[in-house]
Image (cartoon, rainbow, N blue to C red; front, side, top):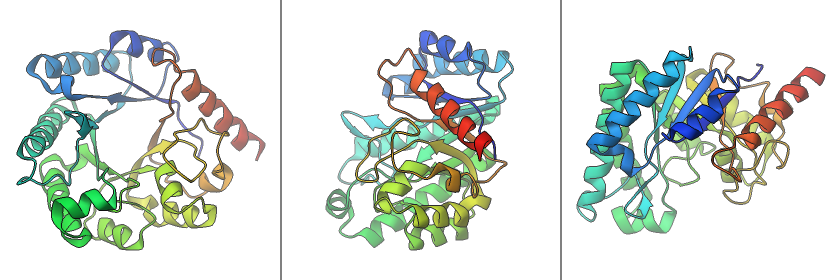
Length: 271
């Protein structure tokens, strides 16, 4: 598979225009809590339409990652954090409705919390996973082919974990596979990473290409970490889209994402 130039931006027109000048074929919107207000959703809709007007067909809206200074967690306890639960559900519902209207995609993160936080919220990991999968089933039911679910380094939804992988296959989920997250879960083992990517490839519709040292969440430019990209690209789903989800020095300059695309493209051309 030869990668697409997939870029990510907030709903800021300055960021969007900076990305559009490089003519990406895939565009992902990073949203936050402010985008979930009435005015924010109206602005988001206009920005999606604006990107579509340039001819870009593959557009993904990333569910907000944070709410009230903590993660916007699918596995939030409705009893212990009713406000967080309400935001998580209402924001997902609103984005799915918008995605259906505009014929784009919504990406929902399967989990963020570490094991201690999960146990504090639900008592044990098994219960947390049951709650999360029930909610993902609901999102899939209302969103259909407009919804995908991304893996985490959280034990609630981590690709690389055979139990989770078998569950997402059984539930027929459409997947976003973040390469670095799985690499971290697998403690930097490239062989296990390639096995996991291959195992889930048929259900993967979107990739986050991002490098890592395999120790912690570091979001490195491709070629700056330890992921074996030549082997990874042999097993990804060639029909899936991708973006480069790299930490940027300047949010208004996509150079690290574009450099990652150049690195990967050159690597595959020489292979």
